[in-house]
Length: 362
Image 1 (tube, one colour):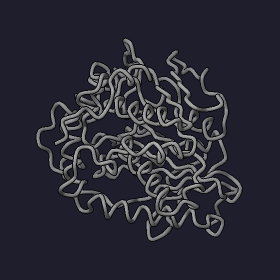
Image 2 (cartoon, helix red, strand yellow):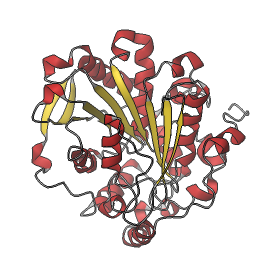
Image 3 (cartoon, helix red, strand yellow):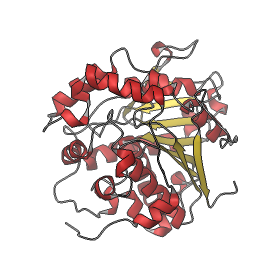
Image 4 (cartoon, one colour):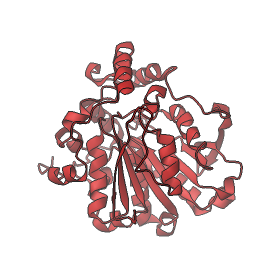
């Protein structure tokens, strides 16, 4: 194991200083209720979980608690399509060939299928902007290891970018991911930069939501954000994340292997990325990882903005109660994709955003 620290704590604190961030009231109450109702979903009660027990816990914790659909849309509004050999869940706008297409890699520690919980969240974005939604159903660990999962996901993404108009989409492709899905989205983009530069340059924006970018977990365990991260009792902790990485990664990987830590990619790779927005909760388990990648992009002089949802945890995306606490993230994403101002966004409870833009015109 590499003994050197893979990040500079002083630089990370300079990028975002959380001060005394506290959970928003509704979020804190919901976290306590959820932990009591489904203790298996709380990291403090998980001891050497199996993939089956984790999947069962997620099913229970999301039952009747996931984000509801906006008026006029339901789960049946989505269609099933195959793009580049990848089964995808797709929601098309009325004029699908002339609006942005948001490609969202769902989260779940590379081993949990939470696609169904992402469907209503993404549908809400369509109430703020005209867009298409694509949710690729990529292969999961431990049944599929990282190299194969990434290879199949890369074929899907290249097939979409190669000629989106033949699939009924416009050329404006926004690449997104949440948690482990953010790791996949960013890694795919960086790999594509080397494998097929013309296709890479077709990605118009990247949005990384609560990104897990350091699979060595050095930042999660030793970064300067432990006080804030420990307030997140809804998401699993670093010990469970370590188990998930063991299921996902191939044997023989090293702690500082850039393929599994995108923030350690070369300056030349990072600075060539399209405009990127990193979004994280101020009290979430992967706050440090999100700041880690934002700081790496800042130092590479890539166009990047770090948006911190004050008072929020890691799972703001999939629970109705959390989505109502603070800024409504689907609206935030809609504004970002269309280039609208976001700095003054405040939720009905008064919780807003901290926005730091680096190397951009903003």
